[in-house]
Length: 186
Image (cartoon, rainbow, N blue to C red; front, side, top):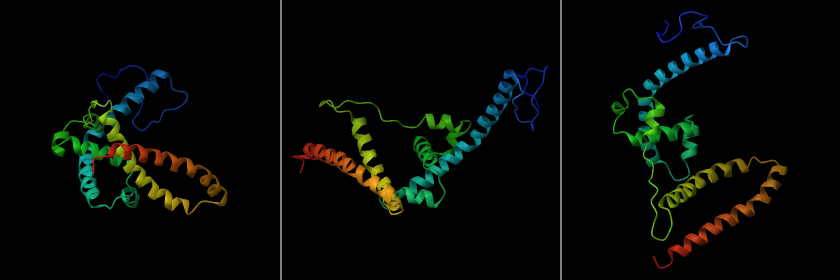
């Protein structure tokens, strides 16, 4: 069925016809617009599913030992980017019903983002939160890397051995800076 906004004269893409290199730019644009509208329409039904996935992942995350998140996602065939988006959507809405009429992207755009607040000492709270999140994520990545390192070829292992001191030095510098800030907190 044709949308009223589509032109009625001229060649119209058929539902089962795929774009071809002989199509004009206008015809390709019309086809792309039809497909885009269909995707947006389908995403409206997907948004509540993202919320439910986010709820399940939120609850699972509470039960998972530190450093095991990536393993959990892989074991269940869940893409980490999609998992992150689902958790953000879950965090932004009280229930799946609130997503009625929203696409996944619209729901995701309403996620809670930290505000850019400056501490009196000139440090940004966002930066500290990002550093904290980075270090937590790094622990997850390191756990995965440890398993992958055991599979390295001798050549790859030699290359990794050259890179590791730089990584250790960078982490040590972070530790020293944080330790200096923590003096007197004890």
